[in-house]
Length: 194
Length: 194
DNA sequence: TGCTAAACGGGACAATGTTCCGTATCTTCA
DNA sequence: TGAAGATACGGAACATTGTCCCGTTTAGCA
Image (tube, rainbow over all chains, first blue to last red; front, top):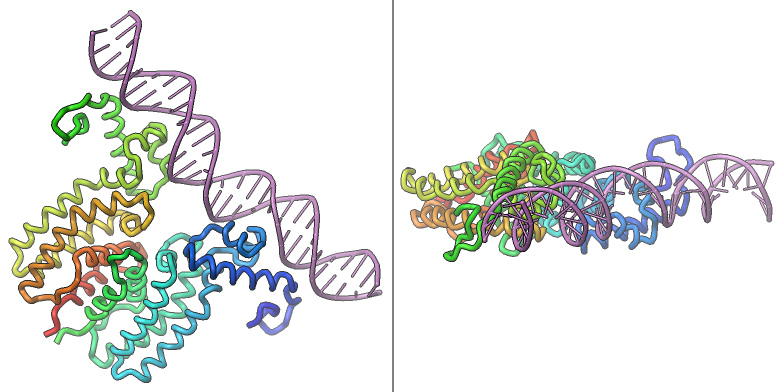
């Protein structure tokens, strides 16, 4: 789906060329700023970097969540698509689950403040929340179900809850804290006692 | 240690009675506001509830962390003191660890935003962070060491990291998320595979 | 009762999110 | 090619909140 069209069948008027250009510029600027200042960087900072007014940001991305989603969409999609692939190539479903969670963790820990935003019950982040849910929870559920089906893990934990827990464990940049290790322990805790 | 004295040996002039009174009033007001609006409630709101000016808050509690610590000091102390007691009365060190973590979770989940503040790398919360560390990490370390010594859990995880992980799992009020369950899985993940 | 230091309160300032409106620019159509 | 209308823009304006300052009040004491 391109920026110029409307997605649905009957094509309405395409957006103006300068608007499309600005949207691209904003995405690049936001991506750069997010790396240095996190996803909570001031709107003015992003606008300045892109060389546009603040209103332009709100016009293209009504909420901050929309901007965050747009910036990370590619990586989220890649993560989502990796799920079935891992399930097909790993020795056991549980191994696939572990590897997929690793991917998710890798994604989260490199994005300052993303996990915090994801957790936030601030209304402005609802869209972000919903997007991650729609895109990743079903993938996780598939892996979880497979691992439960093979008898490797206890059942009864919702994918939603697991994802949220992993996200919570990752929203921490402390130097004496290793999110990967904690997540690994959490996943180990899923194993059915035998 | 009372509010009127200086703690150390040579007693300087005690604080004025109205100052002590205001400090008490502020603590009560803050406790009430924290319940309804979380520990991030606006300074003005707390000041208004207590019927004092905003500057008075800063005078008594230079950072928000100081206020939060003062409000929850009793509960934190109680939690810290429960550690050795549980170790003495539980069937195994691992059981004691589990029960103590339960206490900690109970404390955290009932305080909106406390865990988030604890996690925050915002400089203003350094004191809060340090206090929790000083007071609770040693207790946790004792339980962890005991459980490792009895061979029930894998060793190699710092108490600091575990506490932080548990704290992270608890900073979530989502209705479809149960922090206790996730923490239970995490603790289960500590068990030495056998 | 009057003096002094402590404490107070509310306004001032700064940072940031959000919205509004006059202006500039693109697109279309003749 | 040159208006006309729709679209998008930019920055100022407003709201919220944390933080600090300063003139005023008050408690403690002689």
